[in-house]
Each structure stands twice: as structure tokens, then as C-alpha cells.
Image (cartoon, rainbow, N blue to C red; front, side, top):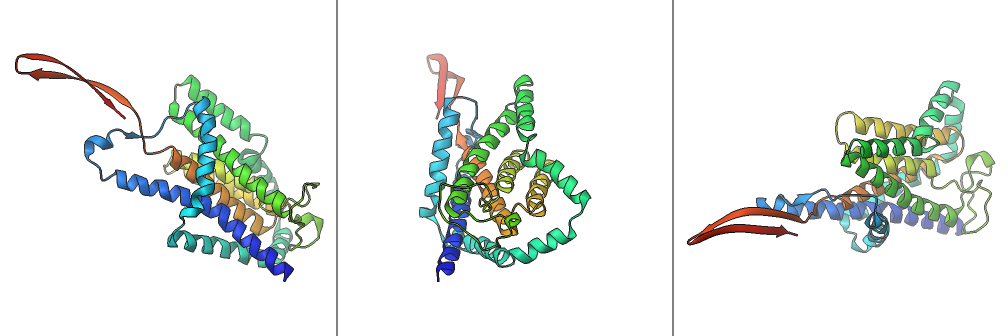
Length: 295
């Protein structure tokens, strides 16, 4: 009975983190579709909200995080179906984690391990800050606001995802595969850890998808999204091959990172910017200028 309760709690935690982010993104998408039916002159004021490295950017962390966390209160039937699917897949992997792990370790090669390690450096490793920093520097020098925005949203997605992941890790304390303690060994909430019981969910997988999703969303073309998601996927799979995480760890983590990234991007889209315009005005007996302020 105790094992069943822990398992049930795990399912609800997975569904909660996943649905919080996916529901928030759906809400903003729905808002966008309603706006699209407004008169054309109002559509012209709908643009992607500017993102700059200032005080508003950092306070936005709190606003976006709060909205994501409270979004489960607005779940609908579609949200519950989505949660059921994701939780079901995670549960299915959980039931077969030991078998999957054995198969992966039996079939790993030096080549796949080397490739995985190198990609992981970019997906979530020593090169990640370098890549993002270089992108932001280029955007600043070239006055490319889109690149700067992409980097800033990637960092926010990285940070928000990290909060979700670390909360789950410290609440559950699942033992990693390399401990040989078994796939169903959980310590529960505790302040003490040596890192060997921080398996669920995978930090590398979640953060790789958190950043890759933002980049893919901002640059929705035939080249960048496939590259971004390939890097994130290899990073996630490499954690299983390196015996650091179970398959269910990386799947749940990838879902959390993906939907957090989607939610963060959605939060900064379809916002009205205040604009000022001037137009000539000709009336009987005189003329003038009309100043229009849209907000």
C-alpha cells in the first residue's frame, strides 16, 4: 500500500508540473485566436512584446512563474486528457525502467557515448552559457533584437524549469541507476543528499528542452527547430546511456522543459505595444495635426 501511495503521488506530481505549463500556453494561444477576429486596425497594434535586459525582465520571472503555477485551477477536459497521456507514458516507462536500462547499457558503444557527451556540452553543459552569451553579444553588436529576445527568454525558461525540477528532486529523492538500488527506490522529502538520489527528473534533459524549445519557437523554420530538438533529445538519451537517469526520468523532464519553454514564449507574444502616430487633419475652416496614442 505504501508503494502504491508513492506511485500515485508521483503520477500527480508529473501531471501537475506538465499541465501547469501546457495549460498556460494553451490559455495564451486561445487569447491570440480571439484577438485575430478583431478589426484589422486593432491587429496592427498586436506585436511580439519587447524583451530587454532590465528590471521588467526580471520581475517577469515572478509573473510568468506565478501564472504557470496557478494555471491548473483552470484545467479543462482537454488538459486532463493530455495529463493522462503524459502520465500514462511516464508510468509505462517507470514500470519498465530496469529492462530499458539494461538494454541501453548492453547496446551502448564508445562512439555513441562520445557523440552524446559532446552534444550534451552544448545541450546542457559547459558550452551552454558560452553559446547563449555569444548569441546575446552578437545580437547587441548587430542590433538584432530578435536574437537578444531569444536568449533572454531561453534564460528565463532555463530558470523556471530549474525551479520545477529541483522541487521534484528534493521532494522525491529517487535513486540513480548507478547506485544499483533498483528503479523503485525513493527516499522521499529530505534536505540531505549526496547527489545519488536526485534521479527524478533529469535536470540535463529538462533544461536542454527548456532552451531548445524557446529557440525553436522563435526561429520557426525548416532548419533551426530540427537541430535544436535533436540536440535536446541526444542530451536526454545520453543521460540514460551514462547510467545517470532512468528512462522515465528523462521523458518526464523533457516534457516539463518543453512545455515550460512553450509557456514562456507564449507569455511574450500577442501583446499590445503602445504606439504614437501623427496624421494631418483638414476641416472646414482650418487644418491641423491629429496625434493618436494606441494602448
